[in-house]
Image (cartoon, rainbow, N blue to C red; front, side):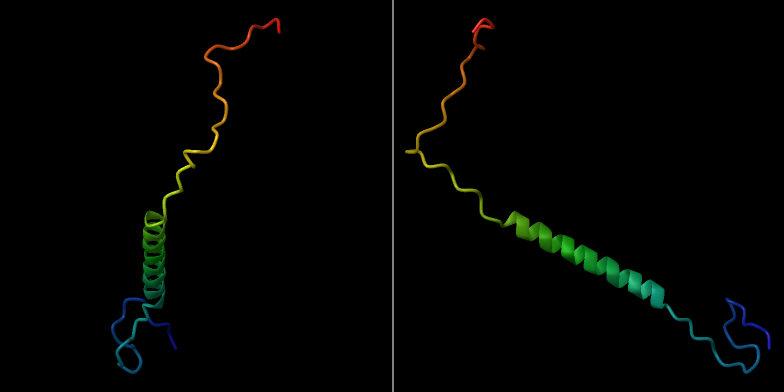
Length: 74
């Protein structure tokens, strides 16, 4: 028996049509779709996350830094 050519539409021995399996292409398409869906989900989850709470206005604030550095001899 001889191997069947890649582009043969029918089997050279029996004449039955060749069925091409597109499994690899289908799996790549499904994986791509799942990745896109996961990215969209993460995007919307982070976009709708609650904003961080504002600090309490009555709480004492940290001391502010001086406008100029202290002298070097201290």
